[in-house]
Length: 350
Image 1 (cartoon, one colour):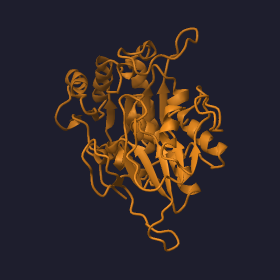
Image 2 (cartoon, rainbow, N blue to C red; image 1 turned 120 degrees about the vertical axis):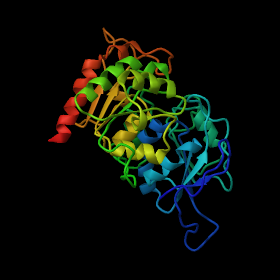
Image 3 (cartoon, rainbow, N blue to C red; image 1 turned 135 degrees about the vertical axis):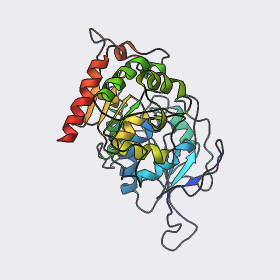
Image 4 (cartoon, one colour; image 1 turned 90 degrees about the vertical axis):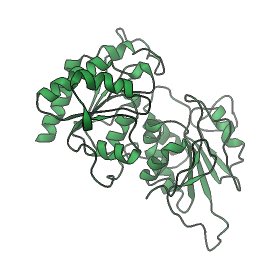
């Protein structure tokens, strides 16, 4: 399974990610379609995998179209639950202003983007046969379930589908192994970047963890996404890393997937690579700050450690899109991260 071809960024042309029969009952002109809106980032798509797979099972024979950023087409293909990616995005986590939908209205539209009403209205403009979405005062004609703020992201979207009679398993998130070996099999992968400063643990603390792991004989690879080379260098330089152990510039999805799948452990903040590592079965140590792990954390288990120190007195969560590292994130010390990584490595060894 894979993307047939890429389209230029910003193009409205759809990308076919899985060959699929174009006819139903011998009619080559009529294919029922499910349109799913989740025009967000890598971690958002991966937390939506259980819901996407539930929709695939509930609507066999339908073409599943995912409205999401064009760069996520390889990830969508890897889920096995998407036929076509319809490029759609907006700055930040906003709702796109329009969708370049063509042909008849979707038979079913599913809002996995947010609580509404903007995302509801965007889909309603396409006149779908059915719309599955949460209830919202701004769209009182949609009789969906009530949105709950304090709910894990995977559970939320599965609950939405369950309300409409679609069985969904929040733990159905593993991806099949990527083909071929990664660039650093058996290494500890450290990813210091994140989309916002609020979720970036200080580089000097990552460097302290990397130095100690190397002193203990472990190979460590530092990686970052596009535009994060400076952050990568602020970890790699003080830790004495160079050459093949410093992966700058943002790896293509296939290499990043293989890197995670073959890692001894993946250490990062609450960002996309943490979800990718979980999807490929790698042990993870994830550092949480503004958002608690009960909302975005990995499944419970000995292979995943979520580090988080809530605000004293149980204050409200921080701003996940803030510019400065969240105070809760700064409460995590290098010694704590090192101990968590070493414990995971010991479990894996036995």
